Image 1 (tube, rainbow, N blue to C red):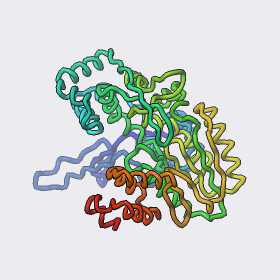
Image 2: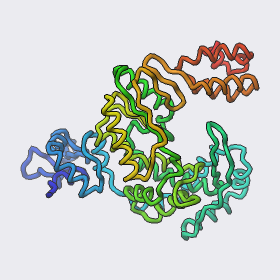
Image 3: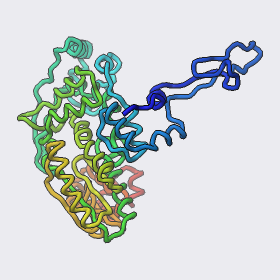
Image 4: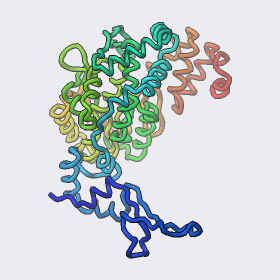
Amino acid sequence: MVVPSGIIRSCLCPIAGGNWNNAALSGVRTRNLNNTRTNSSNNVGGRDCDFTSSQLNSLWSDRDMMSGFLAKYFKTSIVVGDKAEALKEICLKRRGNLYEEIISSENMFQAFKDAKSSKRNNKTVYEFELNFGREMGDLLLELQKGTYKPKPYNKFYVYEPKKRVIYAPAFRDTVVQHALYRVVYPIFERTFITQSHGCRRDHGCHSASDYLLKRMRACDGEEYFLQLDIKKYFYSFDRSVLRKLLERKIKDKRVVDLLMMFADFEGDRGVPIGNLLSQLYGLIYLNPLDHFVKRTLKVKNYVRYVDDFVLIGLSKSQANLYLEQIKLFLKNELGLELSKATRAKIKKGINFVGYRTWQSHRLVRKYAVHKFRRACVRGKVESVISMIGHAKDTQTIPHYKEILKEFGMTEKLPKKLQRSMA
């Protein structure tokens, strides 16, 4: 296949030119700057590297040619369906020369500030800051020489919502992770679809729930939804697959090696829960699934929050077919298995990201109400405020108001929140 040279030029190169009304001074390589100072008409034209509408229509006139162009020159298997999303893939090439940017003094200092802000009143942060010059100097020197290795994790258990092992990194390693995150995250963020939620700015559990409710209301209650969940998601990562996904966008081997240090884990599979970068890995690892569902299966109504995802507005036969296709894709491409699959009519409601959602309304889960009552009994004001924020825009709020009055907690809330919960 021969790719038209105009496509590549318009994709990569800005265009500037002279006086297009003058044949002798027209063209993209000319400038008409020979006017006198009193004549402000220098007649210099220009255009940035975005597509014009006519070029865009021409480019997309042949889907087969465009799919081949993507596969051959940009190493992506995405089936062209949505113009805006595929254009992002075209314009994004593999990034190199990132290592020096990551370990620059400016980026590392900002990474320290980011890491510190999430660990206030922490003894290890205090000790690092107390000897900041030596600690940061040693860290930079190790990164520059290539001798840096993360320290062993501090392991502990959490029991809500279920028992899990958390691997807490040393503070110096948290700084390095923030330095990586600041540079690497924007590269991958552009490849994520808008329906992918979790650990993204403006794409948390509230936005995922809002999107689900909106799409449910746009469908008939007799239509079906398919809700799926990955079995032991973070513990099931195939790290060789993760490395390949990272290398699709990053060609700097030192950066990929550094990223993979924080993916190292006990056993052959999985990444440690507790790392900042594990959250990014969670988004990246299922990104191919998002594109498979949207581009290949062409499911219009789809939303994912980490490893929990829902396809909405299906027929019963579509739900059964998509379930089998997704199972095969997860197994063959990502080495993952489903832990559960729910197929039901939309009118029965969907339990997703901590909410029970129907077309008419939504409520928080029953266990969340139990926790709220327990927090009120114990007088834990901060927990109460957090749970009120979680229940915002749900029909659980009136019930929460009654519980607050029952235990005399309303007056203990901040003044602004008191008015809304009165």
